[in-house]
Each structure stands twice: as C-alpha cells, then as structure tokens.
Image 1 (spheres, helix red, strand yellow):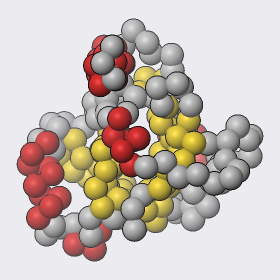
Image 2 (cartoon, helix red, strand yellow; image 1 turned 90 degrees about the horizontal axis):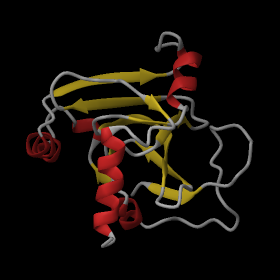
Image 3 (cartoon, helix red, strand yellow; image 1 turned 90 degrees about the vertical axis):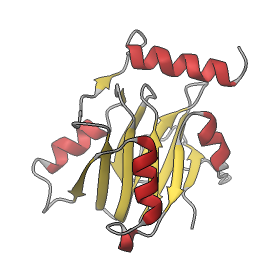
Image 4 (spheres, helix red, strand yellow; image 1 turned 30 degrees about the horizontal axis):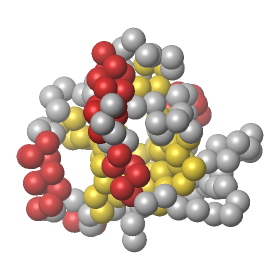
Amino acid sequence: MAMEAWFMDDSNEHPRLPHRLNPKELLPLDKLAELGVLYWHLNPKNYENDEELRHIRETRGYNYMDLIDIRPEKLENYEEKLKNFYTEHIHGDEEVRYCLEGSGYFDVRDKEDRWIRIWIKAGDLIILPAGIYHRFTLDTSNFIKLMRLFIGEPVWTAYNRPQEEHPARKDYIKSLNEEVGF
C-alpha cells in the first residue's frame, strides 16, 4: 500500500489527528517528487537483508544507520522530543527515514507555503531534501520505529523557521525554481 499525502486543514485540533480537508483529496506522489520528496515502499520485515534498501544506501551514500523507537516507554523525554519534532524547521542535510513499525506524519511545505501531510506506515522510506520546511508527529497509534540513514556521521541539527538565509534553504529554493523553469 502506497504512502498517502494530502493538503492539511487549518484546524487547531490535536496534531496527531489526520487534518484532512473535506472532501478528502489525496495528492499524487509525483506532487511530492516536485518538492524533492522521494519515496520507496520496502519490506520492513526484511530490512537487514533487503537488496533494494542496500542499493538505495549504496547509490545515495548512506553509510550510517541507526534505529529510533518513538513511544512513551522507549524514548527518554518523550513529550519534549515530540514537541521539538513538531516545531517547523529545516536541516542542512537530507532527512531519511524508513518506517519499520507503527506510523506517523511528516508535514512539508509546498511551493505556496501550504502544509502537506504525509502519512508514513511500515515499509515506507521517505527522503526529505535539505532545506525543506517540515515537522514530524505521531498519529493516533502513538508509536513508530524508524531507521535513520545518514551520509557520514549523523547531524541532527534543526534550524527553526525562519531560515531563508541558510545555505541549504537557498539551495532548496533554487532547485525548486530550476524545476519549474524560472
């Protein structure tokens, strides 16, 4: 089953709710690709021996991997970390996450600064480009186990919005403008 994405409503309800517009309208994955968001669906039960995952890692240079289990009983300072994850930010590097169990939401900004909610579930591997404004939260299942992939030593530095002068943000905006021919 493919990952789902949709434009978010403007509700102030709990962030772990779907926040779908009414009527419900899913975005095609090629709309995410236009923003530089990449996606694969893999077999999460076979991640240790998955040839497609190995190929993605080798091709893209992801030589560091760790696992994070986000649930109240497993993650120290759980509520504080979720609050930090949900603060809008960018990174200087790609954010690569492979969902092995559970589910959650990555929210990304589109070219018009609207929120797009991306619902990832077990088997979904997502790559957010450096410089894209985004945030993360769990859904109502309240847990997710993720594989995090990096090129070299991991860097978890989040730069909270606004970051229009950050080199990664400038490069990201430039890549969007090149894509549409400006």
